[in-house]
Length: 191
Length: 177
Image (tube, rainbow over the protein chains, first blue to last red):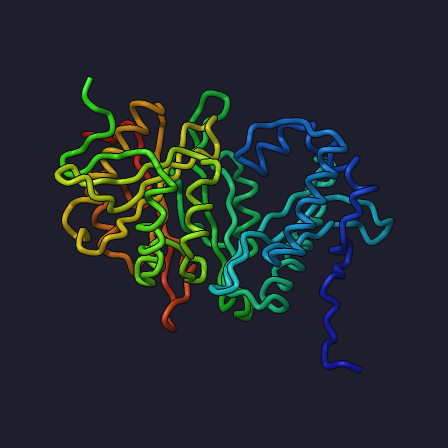
């Protein structure tokens, strides 16, 4: 028996698991045909991707993870039936500073508001701070996404930067918000 | 119209990997310069690597900085256009010759780069990141018109201490006021 009693990848409702590009790419491609999905997760122009494009992108990320060891990708799956509901990843990792960026999304609007994202975030934070031994995580969200802001604040992230009017969407300028979370704040009891 | 790439002390010129790599490799052998510029672990670049680096397909608008009086190559300034649809670039600048530090050459080059960004690229805003131990750069960027927009707390660990990455930005509506 090991001293480790923690199941790093298991939540109550979801698990962090590997991607299977053969099977998952079709689901991920479906998410990209929803412009809201893009606008909630990315500064890039919304652009529907084919299954083949998504698969190629996944494979490129796998290669990057293997060669540079600067990213960790997880599929968020339901424990009940293994269905893919989202992704969670850590990237732009700088080992010398213990710093990385974190990204998490639930793909289908019908799967949002079920607690899947919160559970996956708790698992991902523990993985980042207690397995990768990172010191700090950075992530961003946008002024027009108050739900995203609340989500990050609930998990202890602090708004650190407002990049003024950095986003132009639907003819309006919006701020990009950058959030940070330090390991010592995450570890503090009663956080 | 005035010469778009000419400032009061410096002008911005094209990259020439063949003639510029030697100076750039020498700059990269200075760890103080390397740590002011970049968060990656400091590593001196060989002449070969620097040549390849300079010859690589540019992802944005890259210039060398030369002194007006004697044409001496003293640094570089790059603007990367990650998301052109939002009208924004991220700018990186380095004065590699330490005897030109603190004398206004970098600020002048940044002013020229901003004029290029706002009047030629028609940007809406220009952004940069700077480390909290680089006080000279912070003063220079403020002089060129950048405002602090926040700090990524303890994003760097160097010489046994934590430092912040400070994010700055300047909007076209603020520029040149």
